[in-house]
Image (cartoon, rainbow, N blue to C red):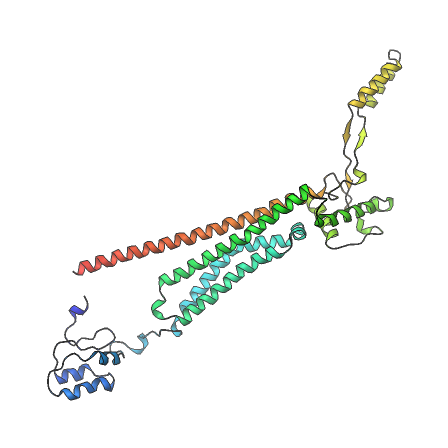
Length: 380
């Protein structure tokens, strides 16, 4: 449409291609001013005869922009140079966005690394993997965008390409979160089942059980029972990580022992109603025979109930009735299990977001194509 309105001899784009209309020698020389000598020399053999359209080779050689129409400051290089400004802006904005999306998984991983119960049963491999995955995606994004703006041509540095890169890394981060969340959830379930149902039969808890029994034997001695903590008693020796875990569980879960109840916590049979019945029997000694008293004693023995005696804690003067294996199992299920589920659904949400962005980009292509078609129809 634009070429229809150009008069004969007008400049076509960035090349001064002479129109097919005939031109005189002075007109041709004026039109070819500022172009390579090879292009200007084409007027010499033509003499004063009318000039026609030069061959395509000449238009290909005459690709230098006219100084009057295209100054040097307006020519944008195709690689590097002036593209550093948008590149830095896009890298900074994308890096901040990825850091915000990775903040929750990294925070949860740090919580797991600081939890003594989780570190003993599951180790630090998976929390470190979560942190490394988030940082790896961020580093890969920075390297990819820097290489894209440095090596790609100006014609491909479009809005659609930039949106495609953002969509790709959001999808990658979501997929990574889904993959690392599955082993975290699986670890929590396995540890819960081992502690609740096979506490005395797995190697990891067997050593902890043995250390707990030894420490309770030391704590039960008369010299150590009056101390504030077993750490002040003779014969105590800290062994990592077992004593550290027992101390952490006592302070966090308010429990003592592990997979067993010490002898000090055996059930004590107490006749609750014995004293009252004997008092009534003495008050009515003139009306109650020895046989009736014996019958009352038998009834009272059937109504007796057992009361659990609290067990002295190892590292404090307190006493607790619960054993620690159930507390540790529930902590693994609630803490590590919930973190695994949260990370999984966050990854699913990011992947859905990337899919929605892709459909919106396709919709943008369709709307743009319809708008362009309507413009061409308006020009006829």
